[in-house]
Image (cartoon, helix red, strand yellow):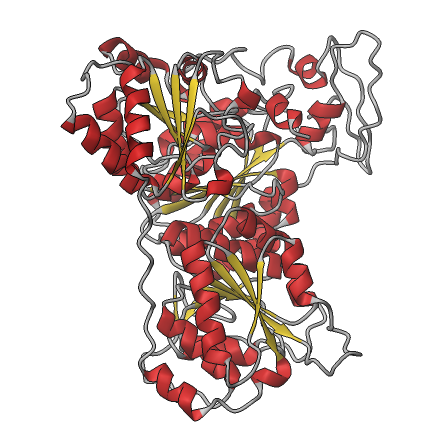
Length: 633
């Protein structure tokens, strides 16, 4: 992008997370005391460091050069991304997986607009991120970079803040930080160039010396009336289920204890996957990714408690997981969330963890019936035997077997679906020289990989027709082992998500599931992963198409249906493994399970860089969860 005076590479002597130091690598500055700030830009950087910002990601140009270097000098690690959209998503993922406020640093105008989708995803997900956005000076009305940056921020649901002056700079920064951390908001903090250049006031420098993270607010517990009402509902239920969402990611132990005492089964929304891992009554994800048994048991519940969970169309399959006589409870910190997605019988305003403790205390104090309710040995045995997709027999046995072409076309026989600059015949087949047509069943691929990769993993998922496979088949060790950036439903965020998650949890093997469309859309950040030396396993479910659109528009039960021209969403074969090698990663093509031996070898080698699997997948005729997704369109 046309940044003025782009920043030079990070100094080679800086310490680098991952492999050796290099240009734009993730760097932690040297420990020598940083010089005192002299300008507002430097004051902002030092203040955010003292407040506890976890990591900064960005693309540096003339407008954000000084503030980024000030952050680094004050001890905040910085990772140079290849695109501002990638930087924003890395910060989003890092914050989610680390529990800290992450930063994004962008140039004024075009640098900020380039980050739009990543900022929107973070804002919709209530991720505490601060975007440090340089801003054209107020008098520079003719600047090429001048736009309504506060209006832009609000348009993607972020909070718009500004450093107004040298005198107010420190207070402006603290206000933005508290908004991000305490209200769980994504904040765009605009930094006008003329204000950045002003001298740091002496009183602000004195205050900076003692600046510390402000105390976090004590989250409210539900009032006694609401607690008693929930206890009564639990006591009268026979088949209760607790579904935990994003707002419950810090309340796993408390909800486990409450479920044990109340005889409830446990489930999560997709973003909270792993929260109850290892519990014998954990059903996994509720919603479109649910296994058949999970869907059955949730739909037969007579009480569903949404804990920090919206119980929206995705999590409840447009209400089809809710029985006609099921009572619905929501626990949430915000009154506006209660009943926002569907009618509820009880809304409980309060923090999930403290509310669960209060409800458990009242159940215990009044000696509520300790009957097992839904937690019977028979249910536990069924969950152990068939609760995970990996335990469900494949039906059909193999997408890559006989009849594959007919399934791909969604009807008897297979019509051509377009020839966009390549000879694409039957859907999912490419007749170019060098492509044998052999394909691997995505279910088999996912199941085999799940067994291969270490338990201590952190899984990220891009968006697309494929996404149910890594989401359903790849186990997560806990809620910090699964990063799901899907609030905006954008493809192309996967690689950046995986980089941010990997830096947040360097103790775990990072794994990414992506489609070919999303991978190629965000492929620039593969260079970032290579530069950082991340041992990232990238699984590209490659069907040479935007598969969701193929199955949505190319298939119908109507006997008079005429297949539309699908040339806009089908592509000739791209050799993704070769592209990966061009970036400096390892890359292999996978057509059957025998090809996965290379993954075992890579894992055994103690990898210091990514491995990209170009998995040539057989068509599933439309993933099992796809119809659910398109109901919301």
